[in-house]
Length: 338
Image (tube, rainbow, N blue to C red; front, side):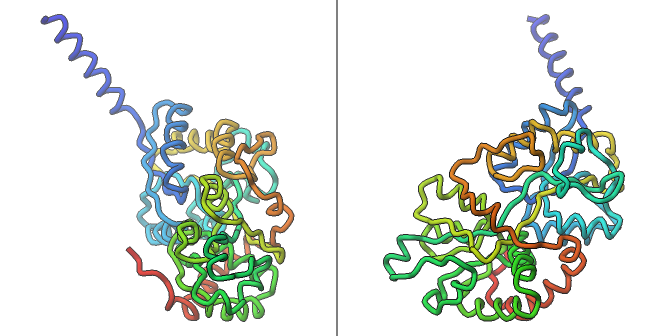
């Protein structure tokens, strides 16, 4: 018995010691909640000795928090945040230069322009429209084909859209309109669209979730959520507006000032590895590496053909001005913050 107790005690001590030696990396992210355990498990398996501790929220909230913590940073790594946001943080000198292993395998638009790199792209997500076919039939609503179609008075009070100040999906959608229409016409379009908006949510997923449940006829959202809900059997059609859709890159970076730089570099290496790309490919159709094929099902091919001309650097530089103008005009219909 004494030998059994001694063996058990030694095993416990060894396990406790191994746990104590693990490096805890605080990782700020806007990845979807259902993706977090998948990515965490894979990262900790591929990078022995680290523990990923997520701090998760919508893109705008994570970005605002990072900027507020500039002089007292708490994040070690940013993994799964808009390239618009990371370019903004880059301008504030908040990102640690590091070119991950195999970075040469990334598509050109998925690399920062600096050497060493300050961020790397992982995958791309695209603006989309979820159209509830049951609600449409009940209300005799036409199916939209363009963004301009959403100005139809028949949709009054039946559209949900993400708030661009809190949602990366909202910002990429607005950036797409600015890129395709020009600034003055884009603001005029948004003003007319506002008449049909029921609510601006603080999540990019929420509008499609709302539409899938029949709460609204239309949810402006992003491609991955629309495809996932359609694959789960939701009564929605996915509309890729023919007049151009905004898009953004999910990206990763090391926060300057981390006390765990070597561990952070190893996590960045994993973040653009083939193994990680295969995980992203379960959810997204456009990946940072061309040598990995996505496995997501029923993805509309029109997305790749209808991408808007988005100037990432310009949007990042003008982010505060764009969001302030948007809030001045439209924030009255935003959902309450939790």
